[in-house]
Image 1 (cartoon, rainbow, N blue to C red):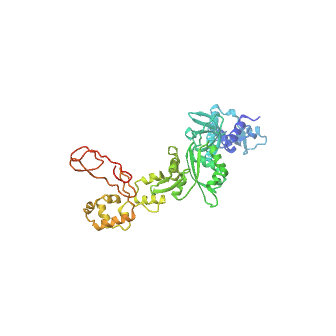
Image 2 (tube, rainbow, N blue to C red):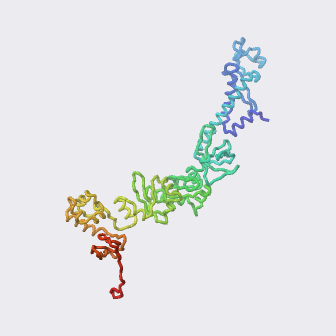
Image 3 (spheres, rainbow, N blue to C red):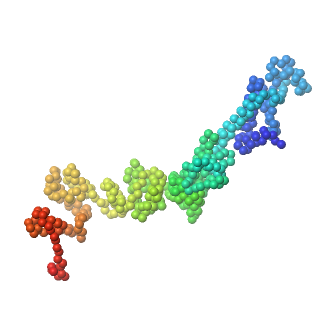
Length: 483
């Protein structure tokens, strides 16, 4: 039956994953350290293991001499011949050392040194092994839980599965199988930190389910997640004949469904990466149908996505989740508006022209005087110096007000009005009366019965004498005469 030492050595080799040579070297070094403490030197000592590691012995190499001067390194001819009959002076003998020659302190030192060395070797070996697997998927089993953190049996070592790296959709029971990503490996322990919330976890699952991703035919540009709720994956292919999105989704969606099941029902959007930010943003807001994307500030990465009213809530997502993930995926600050909301924004003339093109208008909306085609620059400059830059402000001023502006001639005013009439559709609004077929509604004028001051139907008292006013209307008959 194998000795305890043999069993311990086998355990270190096969269970701890430590190499055979390293284990034997560690034990050898510990025994040589004990020998040195006992005899002052270990230069002449040899450690030898028996077959199957059932035993280990220490041998001292000593030279046969006539007169012994150093008993540690030499042996007399008489003592040598007691061990070997034909021993001669000058020969080298390997003499077994009786373990009883070592005192308790030396034995304890050897054991302590061996244990410490083997612990360090085991730690370093495990660290190297799992550090090489950093970012890979590993399978373990639920062992115990403390404060929401789960300890997972990984075979050679215990993994640490912190609560913050657990999906809110998932729950675990003792003994349950857990597939997770090796997110961190620290030398202290070593400690193996597991995660199911990292985007890299989805990447590895994708590689397992989609051969085209594994062999790099389809490449993942970026993955962003709100663990337990939604994941967005942008993919592309360098081969024109390969549909990257179709490859990830699979026939009848079977591949993506396998990934969704692994993530316990988390929603996944797979979309095509585009170098053009407008097209990429449009794809990133999936599943919403985006009409158009307008770049507001390319340097600051701000953009505006225009959607139909029915698509607004889809594009934004519950509590802003969809647009928030799209922002992270594209690295752009995306605002989502409907067509009506976009038209109401206070944008520059350039943005206004872009807005017209977004909605398919044939003509651009002109708001400023200096945007009028063929406008006299001197006239527009004179008006601008008086604070009149918008067409609406110009049309609201009377001839007297315009004539008083320095540098503005009557010909310049007439020219601007003519250009406005030719290029701009002017709609006049009245808060109380409707305008029909482009004709202005004229207010009726009456006289006060007391002082004959001009009054209108909207007055309840005469502004001059204060008498109460009342207006009555008579119906007209079919011939248009008062009845």
